[in-house]
Length: 354
Image (tube, rainbow, N blue to C red):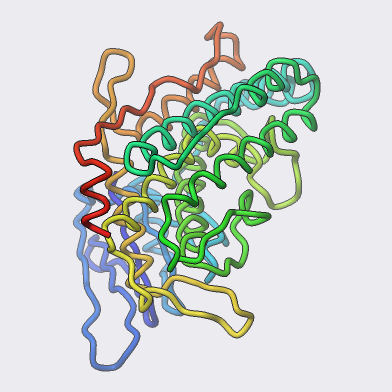
């Protein structure tokens, strides 16, 4: 998976002589923006993220990108997806009908929704187990939530259980973040990217939008309806199924942010405070998040006897959901593959670094 971030003023994408020409934006008259030229059938970019202010995208460039299966996502200043241009979707209408029938069946919907939260429990535990090796103060006990998850009888009850898990998770996660980041929790920002007031939430919001874009690509590829979720309710203009599918993979964003924080890659100059006291990423910060998230997506994991990237695993799990809905697959599981983290440093080394 390779992501290309375009930012600033004067972004330009056009086709000349069958080649796609892309020019990045600029923020001053003195800088020279990066330029890219891609020949037909030779583009190695899977997704283009536009976080810029102004520019031009010609109709021929749109056609060129669609023909080459390149996704284009435009983000708002706060990291929220404004729109996504996806490659042609699957035309298997039976898959969508099966999805609608499962949504209307209360028992089937609840069982599918539980699968997303079960996976989220496991991945949350993985992240905190990883962090606890360096931060001994982190403790994560969710036996009560696991019991509640097994006994829950409604989507509302399931969301309540998930909320309890989230509160505990972010409370422990915050212990790994240095005080100068002024991070306490996700609060109401946790579910959807809205204006954030600190650097960590700003990075998380941005990362979750990148993850949502990846989920939309997979949903589109297998022919499911992104607006019909099982855990999240259907609401106008929201990609409920994409929000569902983010749950088992949010840990990729969380680890991305922790990596940036621990490595000291992020600086105050990578952020800007708006007149409404919200915080947003500057181009330098956005590029760091995109690059680190791209690295995370490209990490390999053993699944179904093969070594696959996490980007491809997202596609595989969405395809498994489609096969489950159409009765091609008997069981549904989002827990596997498990993310294995090997830590070679120690608490003493962390103290020396700090």
